[in-house]
Structure formats: C-alpha cells, structure tokens
Length: 438
Image (cartoon, rainbow, N blue to C red):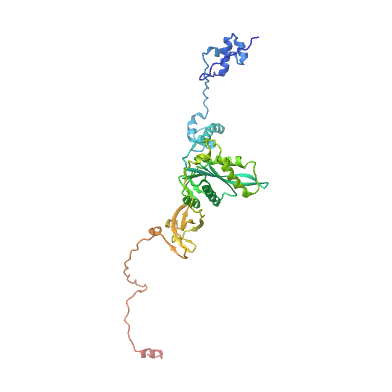
C-alpha cells in the first residue's frame, strides 16, 4: 500500500477556490497526480468524483468561485423600488408588500419579507456602529443614571447610581441614591463639581424628563425643563442631548456605570446605608483613579492633571426654585403671591410656569421657553408691567364728530322736540277748576 505523500502546500493565491472544492483539495489533487496516483485513486482519497479530478488536472491554477446568477423571480422587477422605499417606511415588509401589490406584484408576502430582512440587518449594523468621539481637556462631561442591587445589613436593596465621567481624563464621580428626582439630580451634580473642583464647558445627557420635556428627533426643537435649565445657567455649563435611541453616543459614562457595578458593587456587603457612599468614594480614589484605563492606556488621575475645568468655588449652592403653574389672565397678567406680573399678550389664556429662582427675579415660562422676567416684589398687591408686553394692544382712539339729529318721523315719537311756549296763568284759575267751576 502506498503511503500518503507529504505535501508542501504553496501559498494561497487570489481567488483560490474552484467551483466545487477548496484550495487545499485542489493542491492535494495536483500533488498526488505528480506522485503517480491514478485519477480513480485520487478521487477516493480526497473524496471527490473523477470528473472533478479531471477538471483540476486541466487547470494551471485554482479558479475563483463563480456564483451562478440568480434566476429571475416575480420580485426581480421591483427590487430597485424596494431598496428606495424601505428607508421611507422604516423597513416594514408588510407596508412594502402592500405597495408592490398596488404596482402589480403577484408574488407572496414571504418573498418580500425574505428580501427586506437583510436590508434591515444592514441598517441595524450601521446604527450600532459608533465613531469614537474624543474631547479636549475640560470640554465635556457625561452624566447618566444606573441602578443596581447591593447588600445592606444582610438585605438586598435596590439603589440608584449617579455617574459623571470627564470626557478627556475618564476620571469619574459616582454616588448611590434612593431616587432619580430633579432635586437629587441637582445635588449629585453639585457633589460631582466639588469632587472635581470645577465644571466642564458642556455636559452630555440622555433624554430624561428631569432635563428635557420634549424634543424632535434631530434636536432642532428642544423644550428644556425650566428648573434644570436655570440650574445649568447658574453654573455656566451647556447641556447637550443624545439622539433618541442612540444612548451609546455617551459611551464613556455607560462604560463607567458598568465598571462601578462590577468592580465595586458585586460581592460587597455594607453594615448600613450611610456607609455605602463613603466606601464608594474611597474606592474611586484608590482604585478607579489609579487603574490603567482600557482606552487611554493611562491612569485617570494622571490625565486629570491636564483637565481645564471652570472653577466654581465661592458660588453658594443652588437654591432649587419654586415652580407654580398659572394661567394668563385677559389683561396679560399673572398673579403670584398677591402681586401681578405681565407677559406678552399672545399668551393670554395659556398655561405658564412661574419660577422663583435663587436670584431675586420672577421668571415666567411657556412650554419651557422663557417669555417674561421681572424683579421680584416683596410688597403686597403690586403691579409689575413691562410696557413692551402690551404695546400692541394700545391703539390710538380717534374722536368721533357728533352726528346731526334726525328729523322726527310722522307718527313716531317726537324726541327731541322744540320747547312749546308756556302760558302763565293766575293760581285762582286752578282753584276754580278744583271747585267745579267753569
């Protein structure tokens, strides 16, 4: 029995596959033939038919695989239309099928669905792809919430997790809370500002109602939460928003939340809830700041030395404003604490929000947009009016000339009428009439 020869395979060539076999099989057939093996024996050894062996022996080099062109189907004439239409109907195969039927398509829905499926998959892969976005020192921070379970005094407790990450250095601040209210969000921001010793130019968020009340997909029209917008102005940073459904845009803080949950939260037990955050902050200083970051390959504490933050020390803590809903009266006024403040006349009858901020001002918002700002009056029953708000309502009144009196109509009431002459008589005449005399 002949031994199987040792074959020295050459390097793979471009297009190294034949219609039915791979490059390795093609090379083995050639080598066995050079060793004197018969075609039948080669076919049995490499497990192919003799026609394949004959075809390989006629070739000087491996032939690239050529897929046979697909046979035309009932859907073929409509493929260009489908590729153009899918983006307009959000890759809905049922909607495409209905459109094709209106155009004369007589095939099945399953055929359309199978054609649209890979197009949708290509769209999904494109949306998942994210370009890494690096920012200059002090330019941006990212903020988000997470939630996790922790063990406190032997009991598993659900806690909320606030995380702020500096975009340049990747240094982060984290804090466990019991809720995600606006008041808690603002206090966590201030704790983070104190932790870093300053504020970045802008902060990137998702789209929670505590920050944004409404927005369009492209972000051209944004209705900010007026209380959070007032807070951002107080500290001098610009809030930015991710596109809806594109939370990975703020991937730095997403990774930061996962890191805190796994590296700190898992497997730890805390005696009391009051000890939870102090131990977290110690861990941030001794572990998180000193690790080699997987993206920057440097320690966050070392890169933090190059961050250029805006100092905020000396600024008193932000006083959360009082927000009062009101309806604008017909005289363009809003009543607050017995005093009345004006707003522009187009807002008559509309719902507004009156905000008493940390400064001695009264701000009035409609749909998150500031429409009026007045100094706050501490006296009672005061009227504060901006003449600009009602200027369009003050129109000059033209004096009207008196119209001439119309002549009395025949048979109608005689009013006004000229005075009749009055005859002056002696009182004795009236006395005689009273006694029945002539």
